[in-house]
Length: 252
Image 1 (cartoon, rainbow, N blue to C red):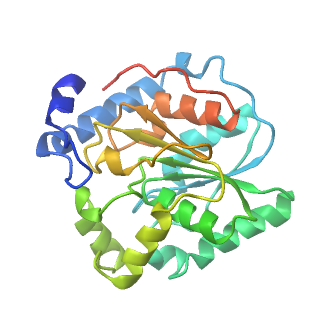
Image 2: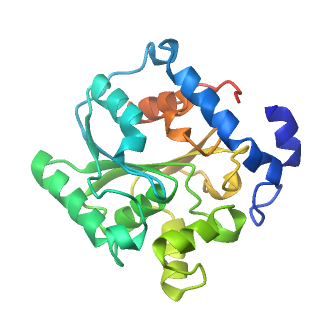
């Protein structure tokens, strides 16, 4: 199924995934949940060092969507936090200047005495990158998961939902400015986990050019429930432990 889909996916960062990819999102997401129920994927994960890690949900999601990820982080020994801001409705939730998210990061920094690692899913990853640009003194590193920070909103199949839920238009000056800011290289280490076969966002705009401070890890996943994908969870654990990720097997 994945090989068939790959042949239909956009070859540039300017166009959204095709209708077939959208249609396969829920079946693939269901398969992810089935695989998550097994335990073999969690074997031999590197232990954590107790650092604080804040997980940011995607558009319209809450902390509940990241329960499996935070559970894994805590089990490995990290201090994992939810963002505590309820449903992610863009600026309606975090404020026009990301101020409520930044206040949350600052509170964790004050509580732990350490810089905070940010893990953001989809829109949450864009917010994480903005926070790191504006307050690198609070942020240790950023990991984005299927976050379309490196291209136009029209290269996604969810930009209309973004407008409806956030009350903003993708052509608004503020939206354009935030997108450009999020897409610039970060002043802290950055890892982008992305999927070429993502059905909601063009995977090519979920990564940036690799250099000494930024890297990209490709997996095979739907957009829905990508944060619960065993390959995603393993990749996150290895990135946090400072290990190079082993090749990830292709999956639905």
